[in-house]
Length: 338
Image (cartoon, rainbow, N blue to C red; front, side, top):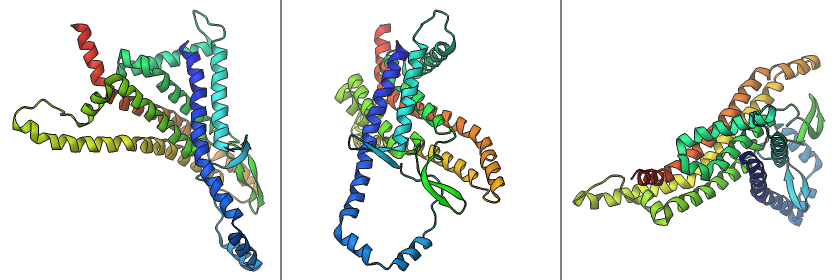
């Protein structure tokens, strides 16, 4: 049952992320259309001498490596679709199908896919329960499991040969140059990582308010961190208020840090593999051989990086959650003992 819910959660998560992703792409498309439809810009471009344009084009250095922004490859019902969005849809659909296949015929003694999914879910549940506690893990486990599985397989999917190297382009002096890849690593798109971080912060706020209430959250941020009496208690009010302001700033910064941490590591890894593939350019036979052999050792490194980054983001979001909800958990356990 838990695994089936995880499959549905994956789909909902990707749909939400894709919606936020589209918002950022819309802004870029609107700017591009404004420039194209501007008559002044169009007339100025026509008046420029052809020779000057050719010299400017020749002077521009050829861009190498993975572009910072995802490439728009089409539209669906008027909405722009990027190559990174396609990867997230493929990964989510694949995970849902694998989950349904694994749970199709449940066995008391699991084997195959059922054994793998149960081992993964139970192992993560026990690990997160040791951090969150028995009550809080029941409320939040679905999200942390989903985020770990989705990030892990999205990172690994980006290492499949063909991702980033198959698409539209032109024939250059050193061979065919792909300008618009059909696929791009989902987490190598900052829109995607920020969307997941933003979803977590919304859930974090819901969990915090449902666990402690508005007054409890305010007391956690601005209240005294130790028991004091007398004049010192009133003197420390200013200090604790300043500390609370800093805490609020750090909370607001969390989506940025979470999204850039994941994006930076995955984006750098894919650029490293592409740079190694293009290290040898001449002769043609050497390029064909070394473009396939040089990145191989680093593929194993990127497999490890993909696992570590998925675990780190899951662990960070878990710690952020337990920091705001742990006190309430402790009170609940104390009440049960009495």
